[in-house]
Image (cartoon, rainbow, N blue to C red):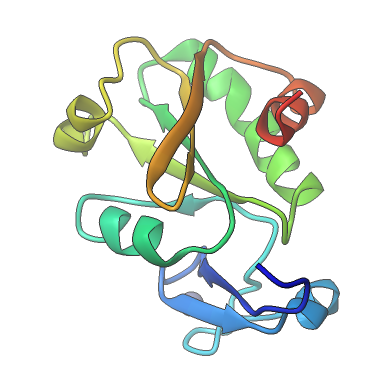
Length: 144
Ligand SMILES: [Zn+2]
């Protein structure tokens, strides 16, 4: 990918895919449909939009498989949101509620939560289970 190729990212508000010139990443771009800020916040995905987003998103996507009854998931949620800010424009942070979306969790072979799965072009790169602090999430997504 050339340095100035546009990026394609899902909107955290309405999940519409937005195409964005690479040199506008620092300009706090908003969704062309609903005007929600596009970068820096996790996007909730379900079976209805997961495949479409993963197929078209040009950035690495890190998916947090979580559930409302899971204490460590609740504890990690603010860290995950903060890491999404740290990597705004470099990675897309997505959340899948495993209770609402059991088929997505099964398809990705999620056995214990919280489970983070990093995908690129729809293909899994790596995964990890267990809650992590903000800086550790950032390092893990960046491959360290
Ligand atoms: Zn939107």
